[in-house]
Amino acid sequence: MSKIVIANWKMNPQTLVEAENLFRASSGAVVCPPFVYLEELAKIDSGAVLGAQDIAVSDEPGQTGEVSGEMLKQLGAKYVIAGHSDRRWKLGESDETVNKKLKEVLEHELMPIVCVGEKSRDSDFKMFLQNQVSLTFSGLTKEQIEKCLIAYEPVWAISTTPGSRSDTPESAIESIKIIKEVLVENWKLEIGNLSFLYGGSVISTNARDFLSLKEISGVLVGGASLDKEEFKKIIDISLNV
Ligand code: 13P
Image (cartoon, rainbow, N blue to C red; front, top):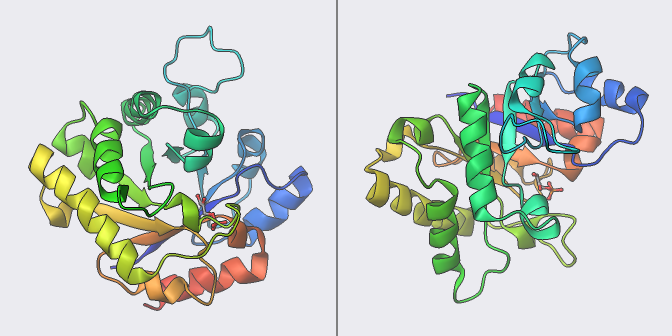
């Protein structure tokens, strides 16, 4: 089965010209740029698919600064990230808000990339993860959860976190197992119907370690997706595992 590579550009790059260059070099990946670049990038036939980094909790228009699911659809986004840890931890997004956003993504028939992951791998990490997963997916049907790409992104492994280091494939799988157990127990989901991604300091030299695992359907890449050559290497690895 082919693996998926998703770029989360976060708040990069600073100019449209740079965004266009990067997008042209990202063939075969899903690229989630800042909202402001979506419209122009959608005009480029690069072989990459577009996603958004966030979505408004509803289409109700009184939400200054927000972007609705309907707008994202019209701008050409096919995927939407919900619950990235930057938004959860730096911008104060609660599990409840992430849950609303996730429902909104599904409502608009966009493909959800749902991020979960503990802030630190301490003795409470398992309980934290179980709770976060339960609240994030609360009220969703089994069929809706099966549509999600569930990205396990431990915050401590994200390259912008001070002192970060990539997770090991073994411990990423341990966490994915914890997430699976919550979903299987609470929603009676079949393990085989769930899709997991790993994110956190994925670069060309460790991408194969994650992409070659049967438990992992793809990778969510931040920093390395901003370097054309590096990102191309990761996409090539995804095609050859
Ligand atoms: P890095 O690949 O820079 O660690 O970022 C991971 C991430 O947050 C992707 O969403």
